[in-house]
Amino acid sequence: MIPRFLALAFGLAAAAVLSQFPEFAQQYLQRLAGKVDQLEAQVAGLDAAAAGFGMTRAEYLADLALSQTGAEAAARAEAGAALHGRLSESLGAFREAGALGRLALVPEVADLDLARRTMGDYQPAVPLTTEGAGFAAAGFLAGWGAWSGLWGLLSWPFRRRRRHLAEPAPDLVAEPQEEDAPFIEYEGDIAGSMRQPLPGLSLTAQDGTVVDLAMLTAPAILFTVPLLGRPGVAHPEDWEEVDDSADATALACSFRDSYDAIRDAGIGEVFGLSPQPAGDLAEAAHRLALPYTLLSDPRLSFAFALDLPRFILHHERYQSASVLVVQGGRVLAALHPVHDAATAAPRFLGKLAEARKAHQKALQTA
Image (cartoon, rainbow, N blue to C red; front, side, top):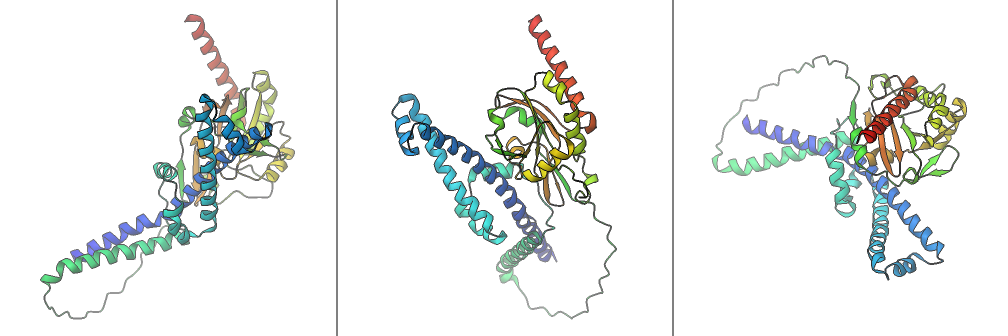
């Protein structure tokens, strides 16, 4: 009895561990894609600088390395370009491979630093997908087989012949199961964004232009939404059960109605960030008459880079509604969760004004 119980325990433990690989691989793939995008922007900037002097990249780096102060910068740039090439190949191979193929590719393409960071933020997933169930079954069989083999070796000297009377197994009656609650998980920490520089990401606006938020010099407001609703298109199932699924349309309209007051307060620009494609954002901007720019981030690269709040609904990941003030490559202020989305913009402006008054008063009394 005890050996079978231990074999079952080993099998279940191995099933639980291996069933997480598809979800872990997906989260690692998203981080890898964000890292490649960031390095791609850096390499593009390097090539643009070289082209400005009429040089190739290699010529530009060699010329830069001639000076004592430029040698270190040239070494970093060359290392970044090499890392971009290696990770780009890994990203392509990882995307094309299925779940089993990704498992086989791990020793060849895995980036240990990205893997450690993915594991540090990883939230276990219930193996409801076909791939997760397959990996869970394989892990269970591997764990069961490993313990059975080990127990067979350990118990072999003590075996005695015993006769067993075959007894019919009792009929198993399945108990009625309660309806499962929607699978929802929450990730990220808004406080963590205050300690990190803005990532150098090139995000596509609804008009097709490209914006790099890290290059903004004037203060700007950036708000993130999980999805901007569209007439006649329903939200995903159980959307109303998510705590962070603020009314994105109401939030967008709130910043539209307060746009003039925002500019009068010294804010240079407003950006809305959504995972939807630029075409959908163009439709929303036109329909809602938005005076500011909407940016598309389908991979949630910005949210992952700053560890902004996110949630998983039925194994699909979304960024939560948040409001940030950014300037000079840093986050100056942040708000999450966003309650009462329709009045979020004026309330956020009020808090900024109070913070400025308190700062000025502190300077006067210092």
